Amino acid sequence: MNGENRKNTARVACSNCPLRDNPAFRAFTASEVDFVSHFKTGELNADAGATILVEGTHSAHLYTVLDGWGFRYKILEDGRRQILNYVVPGDMIGLQGALMEEMQHSVEALTPITLCVFERSRIFSLFEKHPGLSYDLTWIAAREESILDEHLLSIGRRSAVERAAYLLAFLQEREKYCSPSGSARGPIPVTQIHVADTLGLSIVHTNKTLRKLAARGLIRWLDRGCEVLDPAGLAAVANWHPSEPPKRPFI
Image (cartoon, rainbow, N blue to C red):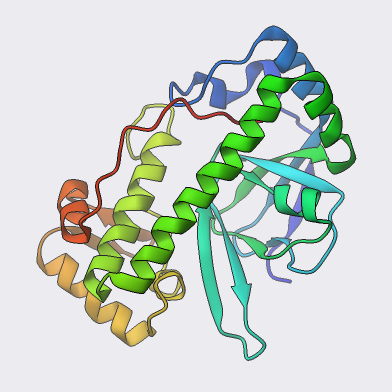
């Protein structure tokens, strides 16, 4: 296992959660905040490259990303990796393992990441006592399904340039809406290897494809990630039309 996972003793109170300052997220009632504050058992800090959840294992916990980026992935027996999706602040990970007994994919920290930790065994009390929060879990699962539908369409039918443009435009949108300011905070923290493993392309093909987007003035590749210069231009290349998202729930 790469990286390191560390329990965080300096716990952020749910009533003062910085995600609640973000207008992209829905407001909680006082009773919901109280429930979540008791549902939460602590926080976990992980270094970039740390494995948070492993496919095929059982986990006693599920998590909400408080800060940082991660990604979900599967690996074939010969070591080939497919990145399924990326997680940003407000996203939940481990819900699949909570409902299906074992994880069907792995999760790795893309950057240093802080996670709110919840006891898997208490998830059913959420359904029993807080229908609003249980609806939020349904919304989160449905949203993940719709994202994966778009990713599958991209891999199956878009050209290499269109795939890359879609992925970077999508990640820019994710960065924008997880920021308290409602605007992107900096480069998207991915390497070209991450892009290749998401798009199903070789690293050589990925490099050539990204250079085409850079030549059009749409992106700039930096040591610490990809800077998107023209989000609308990327979306146009991909023939992708992002809609204004509704208020996002989170736990």
